[in-house]
Image (tube, rainbow, N blue to C red):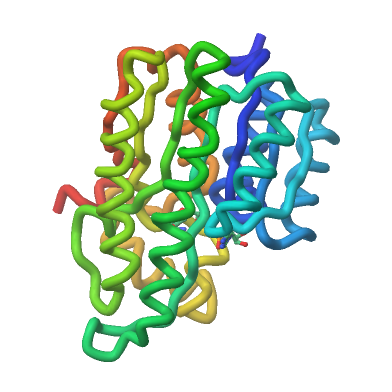
Length: 252
Ligand SMILES: NC(=O)c1ccc[n+]([C@@H]2O[C@H](COP(=O)([O-])OP(=O)(O)OC[C@H]3O[C@@H](n4cnc5c(N)ncnc54)[C@H](O)[C@@H]3O)[C@@H](O)[C@H]2O)c1
């Protein structure tokens, strides 16, 4: 018996490293999973991996910052599966480094649109389906950079801090509907995102491992473990929490 038997989960950025691992883990725990991304090849691969492992999955292309597409996709898949129980919000833009003094407005806006407004839109259109299902769980992916500072990431940091408060807002407003919302703050996790600014993972490790007292970078599966717990009834008294999965990065 899986931790998520009988649940239907909607996972954004499921073509990526962290949400891909979450989607696969949810599938292995018995959930049917709608894998959502803007990149067809990677999101289809996640869904086919889940099916190959004996799970149930579909893939959908949807830009989380496009309200019409978000509503259409959520309504369609919730109708097809007859419910919506779990939402993982993990989509994030990969922006170039700037201070506020040099960041073009369009880059600032794109980061806000994807990382924050996208989360709002998915929540807005998922909540009616969760209410109809008698409750649900949101797992919103923030970052350690939502609580500590890092150079040249003003838009990313602003959105990741805001994700924590948006999560608490959802948690408070819908607690009586049996809807829970928690955020996860990952430390450095080995995904392609880290290669956007450093050419090899060895160089990333050289720079980042010393900042993580546990002595290694995180793996996507470390975040999937926390997400499976938060999506399951084992975390039934947790809502509005910031869950640090950071190898101790923020404690020093
Ligand atoms: N990797 C890390 O070290 C790390 C650390 C802290 C937080 N995070 C957060 O974890 C989440 C996942 O990151 P990752 O490392 O797996 O990155 P990733 O680059 O592997 O995956 C990100 C995915 O998001 C998708 N995406 C981008 N814009 C989208 C949009 N508008 N609509 C739908 N999908 C979109 C991309 O196509 C990609 O598949 C992000 O929110 C990121 O901020 C990552």
